[in-house]
Length: 313
Ligand SMILES: [Fe+2]
Ligand SMILES: [Fe+2]
Image (cartoon, rainbow, N blue to C red; front, side):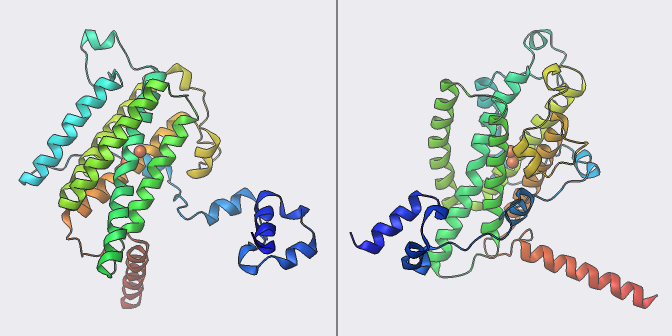
């Protein structure tokens, strides 16, 4: 091993402050990271690649459950698959909410805080897969075909990141059992393989499938919020959202309770629902209307229109 490589390795193992100036001067420049001028947590949060937009109270409260009617055979395939998966997930997580039924037997086994968390962890561990698979496959296709992607990859990877943040947030509230970890592992193996294959065959059906899956996610979080409001989740009544959630959603000081957290996550799921149903309507070479570039162009054209409106008065 050359002298320079040995010095480089020792640099990675220890704090740069403990390295003498003489040693630093001999490290190749490409190995030295630029010094951070500002390192407050707020500034670092702003520098995050996928800083979450701040939801207003009106925005999170305006979210509603919705269903896109399955008209084509592709829609019906996607919806049927989601319904089968939903049944499996209900069975695995022992799901019975107070809200949708007055059935006596279900009321005898209500959803507790622990049951909700178990369900959320399993749901989010599955939900983080499609965006990553779709983003990865489009990335590889773009390289393979040597052509642009039309702005889809960023949105898809951002969705996967967002779902993983949901999962990590719930992991701050409960420690999953080994049984749960094993189920997540099994589900990931099956779902990752199946979804990858399906996406190679028909991306449209896959986005429709995710759209229907997200419809179910919005319903699930709406029921959890209703259980909370009806007083069935007493352990969460005075519980503050985990610190990482407060930072990620940039939750204001007076809105950091569990209810606010569930509202934020439900708003994310509604966004995934709308994005995926829209992507399911598009051809693969259509530009992504949710890309940062499209959003800026839309905002600019809206500004131009309002300017024209003002000058025309
Ligand atoms: Fe999620
Ligand atoms: Fe989602």
